[in-house]
Image (cartoon, rainbow, N blue to C red; front, side):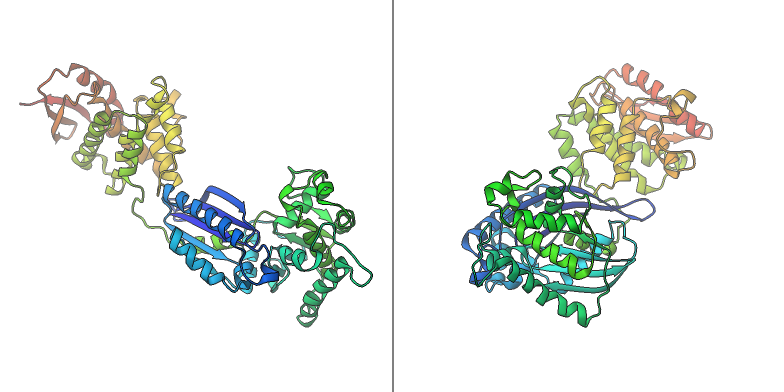
Amino acid sequence: MRLAIIDLGTNSIRFDIHEVSANRKGSVLHRRLYREKAMVRLGQNLFTHGKLDLESRRRTLEAVQSFAETLHALKVDKTIAFGTAALRAASDGEAFLHEMRNKTGIQFRIISGAEEASLIAKGVLAHEKIPKGTYALVDIGGGSTEISIGRGKKILHSRSFALGVAKLQEIFLKTQPPVASKKHHPVVELRNFIKSAVLPVAVLEHWPKVQTIIGSSGSAIALSKLIHKDKDVANRPFDRKSLTKTVKTIQTKTPAELLSMRGMEPKRVDLILAGAILLDELTHLLGAKTLRPTEFSLRDGILVDELNRYRPGKAVAFSMYELEKRAKAWGIDERHYSTVRKNAEWFFDQLKPVHRLKPEWRPYLTAAAILHDVGEAISHAHHAEHSEYMVRNANFVGMRPWESMLIATLCRFHKEEKILEKKNEKKIPYPKKDELRVVFLKLLSLLQMADAIDRTHKEALKLKKAVIKKKSIEIRFSSRYPCDLEILRFEQKKSLFELLFKREVVLKKIR
């Protein structure tokens, strides 16, 4: 299954696509196929006007239209799209989501602050090493901030506050640097506002002091880069003293001066001070001495929920049509792979009493027959190795990692009939106790014979009947054309099958 997650925040919209599957034992696996982020600033001017800005709506709609094209191109099965603080606050939030659904086909859902806090905690704890003692998970967004207090794997308290950097910048700081007067000091007023929002809740709910804050937001990551003066180190921890010092430094600088600072992210120049003051104030309120940024947050919590709900089916989920379409796109001889496919399926069906493979393995032989020569698109020399690489990295829809490995390995060894010789046996990627080793070898023996019978790519032989005897198998065929080369090649390629099943295989031409 291909799953897409779209997180529409106040500042950014994030877009991930995951391949969700299961291994042979049923354990759920996933890998990220695609990731994109756009700074759409949906919350621009929202907190002073109460409505979404026309320009921010345009930027967001363009981003979602682009995502819709990617969803179609990558054949995504399920899309989960959600909005957070900006859409909760906007009077026209629902109307905008209705417009996006009509123009893109993507249905967004506005989640509550409580649900957002819970999902953020779930996403962080599923991936990060849990600190010793009591800790806080703090996610500073553009329109809200979510705080969870935890100990071990247990969340003790979880709250969402209307404290987003876009909102705080728009209402309190307004400019960079903020302009103070005799009666008003923006930074002092902002700090007092943060205290008035968080402190009463912490006191009433008896929040314990924490030792560490894990910051799951762009603000925390941007501050880590700025404090360490390094754009390439995003998740390095920093202490409270360094943060407080940084706040004092940047609150007097102009945007141009901020841009000249090492480690400064250009896209966060106008919001970095609001985020720094908010995080600094929270470290003092919560008693934290260390802060640790993380890249995991809300969308990772959504993914955890989906993985917990996923129930893999036993049937093959990939499409032979897609495999053939890809083989044609790579310019592979359609007549040959169609013939090898037909031959391979014939051998599988006719020789069931001998190989005794369950019917569920037939599609993997078919897939390998279609794809065994795709490496020709790179080079005829060593094309089997190229085929293996291409199949393993093609990201076929619905094909699980263990399935792509099996099919790719069949492609890799379809020319090596001496695979069981001591010097070659170590090449087999499955250990002797693995049930897939036996399946792989049996399927490989069938694929080698199916490929050999079409050596000249002219479909010279027509398979008719397999006569199974106690010590031998007679493969009867008809042909209107010379087929000496096919017969010679078959004699070379049948050896693996004969070795596995202890029966001689003989070709016999009939009228």
